[in-house]
Picture 1 (cartoon, rainbow, N blue to C red):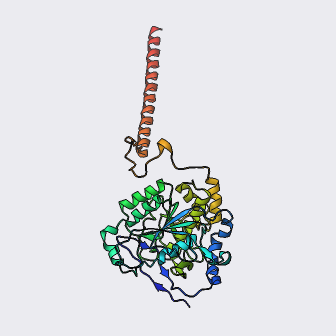
Picture 2 (picture 1 turned 90 degrees about the horizontal axis):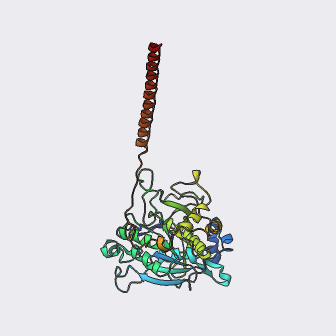
Picture 3 (picture 1 turned 30 degrees about the vertical axis):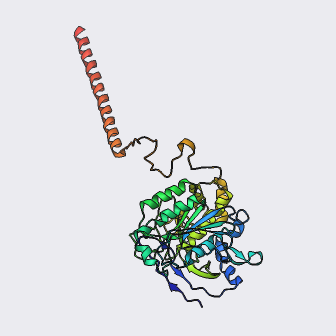
Length: 409
């Protein structure tokens, strides 16, 4: 029997891993691991999706606590990138890399053994992973330093820009924080402008004190253009911990999700982190099949093809529904001939503010509908009055003319 332990991964200046609960590793046979993934594979319709795409040629940047490149289910698929947390831990401290390895396996795990039928199979098993370390596990000795030192405040923004410049096609952000920075907003704009899809966790504060009719917004998920992901339970309803607000675009399974951990271990956990990694994998499948597809169209393909739709087609808990990889690829095929990205002289440099460059001032025309209605009524009244006056004048003129004709007679 696995015994769970709560993990309070709350970050202030930096970011938090958006994971609500992890289970300690326990011995698991190959059948136990792959069998533990069966529900996710079926929910996302991965077997059907893999007939179209397995993510080949795509790089998914995992901005997290680091990825173990030697795990047997990830070996050969991971490139270790820059560590933006350097200096937080004491010299010589090895990173734990638990959360990051877990997320990477859900995205691009390829299994191991004969025909790779053992271990974790990710949503995009032929994709590559770029590991970018931007958070620390809470057990690491430098955790408090990392969260309090000003020099680490914009590690996520720097990590996003680095991942884009290193050729990432998709960026997975299974992290969250309560406050956004100007640098993060600019980094998101930079990534989207370069055609990179960003997928982020909506956060795990859904079962805590709410702000009116919604749970707190988390960043970078709440930035415009980022695919914000909520988590569902086994019934594919919003998981109690998953944030619910208008930033949520889609949802994915986030309860009792099997994944890989450092040192060839396997873990089971829950959180919007896991849901985010699964959606990043689906985005990788789409980008593999349609590499030129813009981030807005990828987001549209994910949302328009979702299943288990909420009443009315959208709600703040699961967005437009639960992601389905096979349907998403089909919708992407329909959208592939379109573009939402300007090219040539019309293109905007994402590194510059919208008000800058060669564009001149923007004329804003404000139409007050209420005033327009009032003025129209006044004009109509005036026109009616004028017509009435003309009618009176016409009648008076006729009377005068008749009077003159009577006198002449």
